[in-house]
Amino acid sequence: MFIDRDQELAALEQMFQSELAEFFVLYGRRRVGKTELLTQFCKGKRSIYFLASQLKERDHLRQLTETARHLFDDPLLQNLVFDDWEAALVYFAQQSEKERLILVLDEFQYLCEDNTALPSLIQRFWDLHGKNSKLFLILCGSQMSFMEREILAERSPLYGRRTGQLRLMPLSYRDSGYFFPEYSAKEKLLFYGILGGMPAYLNQFALRASNAPQRTVEQHIKNELLTPQGYLFDEVNFLLRTELREPRTYASVLQAIAGGATRLNEISQRVGLDATNVNKYLSVLRDLGLVKRETPITDRAPQKSKKGLYKIADNYVKFWFRFVLPNRSLIESGNADLVYEEMIAPNLSHYMGEIFEDVCRQYIGRYWEEKLKIAPKQIGAHWGSDFEIDILTENIDGSHWFAECKWWNAPVGENVLERLIENTEKVPDRWQQHPRYILFSANGFTDALKEKAENGHVCLIAANDLF
Image 1 (tube, rainbow, N blue to C red):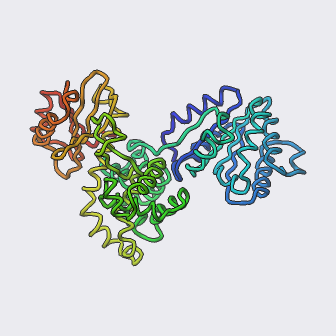
Image 2 (cartoon, rainbow, N blue to C red):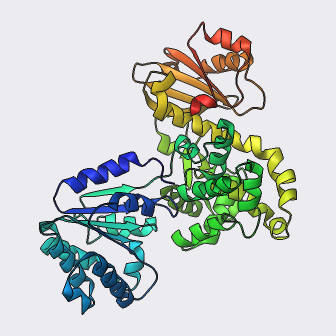
Image 3 (tube, rainbow, N blue to C red):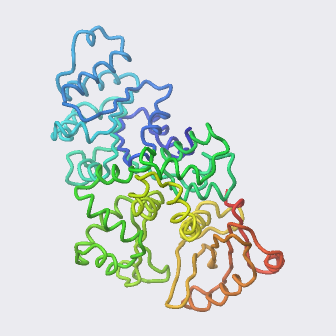
């Protein structure tokens, strides 16, 4: 199943139509859908897609030669094997002198393991041959630190050669919901809360659902996360080992945050490292998109703010450290039912509360035209010692939305709106101008609140509205 990515495909297509030499860098997390995006882009086009693995260089070149033989009716290729990368790249440039050719080198970091000089070789090739052809060269990698350091960074030999780049991000909550057309809006949000927007994870659940249409969210969790054979039981460890040199320390930091340590000093105490060292680990995790730091939107200098809170940004990683890792022994002993009933079910609503806030922020930022009609310039949260406002925005017309998000099992009533209005008076004066109010609810609203909302600057958004 291929969902969304319309903007990404359109950008690649525009570059393809340019007829100029193009050098594109695509990178992103494991399972985020890079390979599928490139496969879709190459359909119906003259292209060579080469997926590298952890082999020796000569084996890669032999495989690349074999791939080229299937595309080009060239007698020369039947009797030779590319003996180095420069020869291969020059050949492809020659093949693209008159007609566009796409060359994709996927999992590029593996090609560099046996030849660390490959970026320099590609730089030389591009300067002498590639930029004068119609070659569309795409380097793709899932080891983000490598791609940013060795391909995109200023000290890289390839710096300044690329004509475009993209860090592919996870899908939004709404696009994630398209994987589960037969499920309710609330169930779609639960899937997003467990899996985040990672297409490979969503597709795995969707495949299971297509074979067993009556399978509940609970059954999905048990089969894929709470059994040692499950697809997502150990995926976090694979992810950390792929990206990080000290995965155990990073895992300790993530476990601390998942366990409720959100401030730097709290994380430092849980992990047993001083704050300076922990800050370095947090910085790497933020670069990977696994951790985020939030400050009140009203802070004038957020980087220096002492109110910063650290949260796990990836929903699957958050769920895994919150529910799977602490109960690993029970899971490996075959106690999936016990873990779900005693550890997950009683805490799932609380867990989804923070996820729901993130979903509502996405709605305001991406889909504001549907019900709000006002574009936000900034979206964030605000809190103090005795209150919290889930969402606070500054809009282009000078107004401010104040929002409360409730993942409750009961409808939201007037009391929530009244408390939100009271909290509005606790924000700095500049943010109180032209206030409007939004209430998000996973389980609807009382009739009294609906009636009251019709008479004021109040917008009610239920779970179905989010989709």
